[in-house]
Amino acid sequence: MSANTSRVDTSTIDAGFLEDVVAVLTGLSDTWIITEGWRDGAREAALHAAYLADPAHAPKATDPSNSAHVGANFPDGCARAVDLTLVRDGKDVWEVDDRNLQDPGWIALVDAIVAHPRLHSLATIGDYDHIEKLHWQHDKTSP
Image 1 (cartoon, one colour):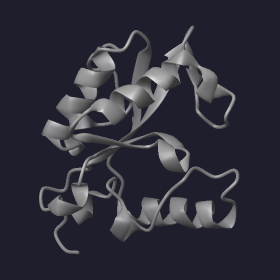
Image 2: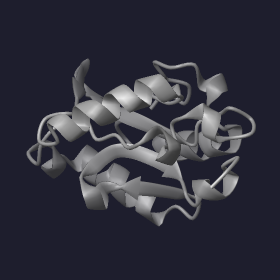
Image 3: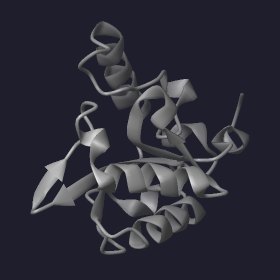
């Protein structure tokens, strides 16, 4: 990854968390793009509703009060989660199904995040592109 490649405003992402993510992505051989970061509660609620209505096809999303993407959950207003996209040959390689999970790029990403002491992958629940700060709940403004 070009260390600063992002499709989002990175100033709305917790700086220490972002630094860890960029360091991991820079160490990988593929190109990675941050495609989601900070969300407001309304966007998260809409994504969550879409997921509940069609969990087999909609992107995974949780209730806004339980989302590391929602800036309002934190005193500094910054997200503690990002979603990533692998870019190969100029095209996004989304992890929309298990076929892409055989891709060495996705395997390397998951392995690198799992090995990192301050990052957490949601790969165990099938949300492979979602990376969050480990124990981000400790940063929340309220339980």
